[in-house]
Image 1 (cartoon, rainbow, N blue to C red):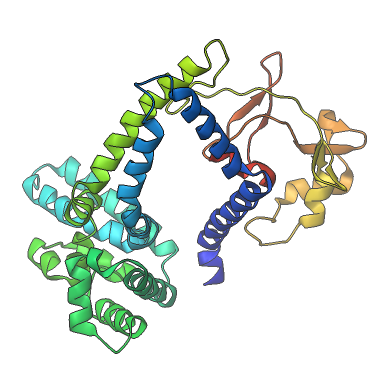
Image 2 (tube, one colour):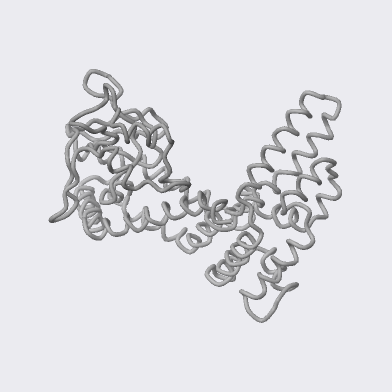
Amino acid sequence: TRLALSSIYANIANYWKYFIGQTEQLKRLKIYEEKQKQENDFSQWALSSPENANLMAQYKNAYSAFEPYAVHFTYLNEGLLASPWVRNVSQLGSTIKSMNARKDDSAYISQLNQNLNTMVSTYQKTYNETADKKIFAQVLSSFYNDVPKSQHPKFIALIVEDFWKGSAEATFQNYADNLWKNSKLIEPESLRKFLSNPSIEELQNDPAYKYALNLVPQDYVKNNFGTVYSQFQAEKNRLDNLYLKALLAKNKGALIYPDANSTMRISYGQIQNYSPKDGITYNITTTIDGMMAKYQPGDDEFDLPQSLIDAYAKRDFRQYAENGTLNVGFISNNDITGGNSGSPVLNGSGELIGIAFDGNWEAMSGDI
């Protein structure tokens, strides 16, 4: 179980650590205060610009209108939709209908079955009934307690009505037990058996499918947020465009970063050592000696191939040796953000010298 869930655990731990680092640096670097100062400076300038005078007030109104739904929206994305079986099961209806509609197209059916088998195999690798059921029940319980009752979807109210056991925790555990017991779509082998001869009628009567249908994202947002979210997004986009235009006017002639979203991003910097705080300095490079010091056979993160271990024992680094060892990583002050892992690092001659794989802990607030 530990091995099967280790990658998911590491993923969540990395996510969790990222937000801890971001929060710490927001406080340490006084990012909030800096942003406030920028907004105050802008508001002062905008007094002489009638078309921009109310921009900050309009931002405040837009965020204030959406703020009551912010916790709910976060629970939707980070909690309700986080169960792998929910995402898989919610799509089965359209898949089976498509199979029935094109049942004479053997190539299409073959490809679809292959895709479904791959989906189940991927799902099965990290499936653990005890953990999955416990997390599922806890997420629903936390949602019930943390999201205002006036915003609760109808299906949550029905679950509470049908499975109430005196507390939210006991109620949703009771519901989870019932779901796992009566559904053919959650346990991987049961799901695989169902998909070998799928029936749309059987699917529609399955309790897991009935639950998952409530969480088709676009339908959920429409049914439970009405126009609040779409209006917030539209207003924010409108204000962002006006704000950027106003900033360009306010800082005419100054160099301002372009919006790099959905573009090929290029940053530049220097290779140098790094001192995050008083008394601590990281050298420019790390070496194979550090890799061997962390080596843990069988560990997902710290295992090493035998060929590398043998090369280390012989100190056989060929043309890559430097000062009797092998450099494996280096620090630069290039900008980086989420999604940059794997980006090539080029020197001034356009030669590949490394691959970006991490940002420093102290700069996580740069994503704000």
